[in-house]
Length: 292
Image 1: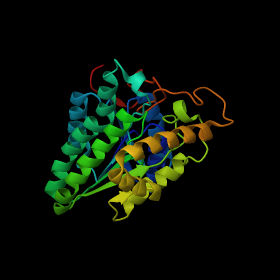
Image 2 (image 1 turned 90 degrees about the vertical axis):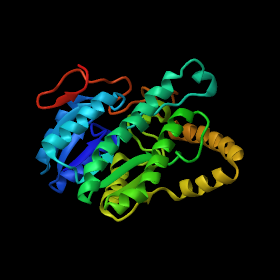
Image 3 (image 1 turned 30 degrees about the vertical axis):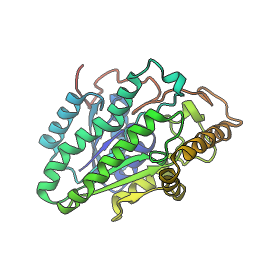
């Protein structure tokens, strides 16, 4: 059984459907029960099996209940794939008076995944087998103006997993990090438009995640991100300034000629669904973990 967070849309959905074609058994989690239930039906139709457990990763109690339910009802996962994420772009001036943005982003991008991973790592290490695949951002190690809170939350998860990795490996558990560049998903749409130029498709991004799941790799990242991370260590101020200018250029190029809601706008996105999307019910066959 493979536990997948952020399964309801974008890269998560593509990963789940690819795993279904292999006949895998999946536990699907995200916030939106209805979308998870629909995905579970697609997984079964594609040859796999799926169970739905909705959870908001910002709720630590809900995460604890999720972990307890997974272990009690489905056993120790063969792998945990962390795909849930919350993206938010704000300038310094737009961040004034909004410390809660940091709370929201760290909850989804760091604290929730970390709590879930710890709960799964204990039995994995005890049995001497398992894989943890964490999807972060190619910009996590290149501080970029406008993405301070998002980059910090992703970089924190990256650093935490890197520090755990050698000890987990001694217990037979492999931890792999996948740094993705821009992907054309609902999470990117508020900033880059619905079909940003030069972005990976969700299917292509899913291919990188699956490669990390299958191959004995511990790190997958675009070459430019690896080089940028080294330069950022050598010249942090210059790199951040250059990254900010490059980011502005990328946004202009990505949305050039694009129309539709959110194209080129600056604002928040989502974790597990479109901006502002929240689960509205328990679904036909799914369960919601945490406060009702």
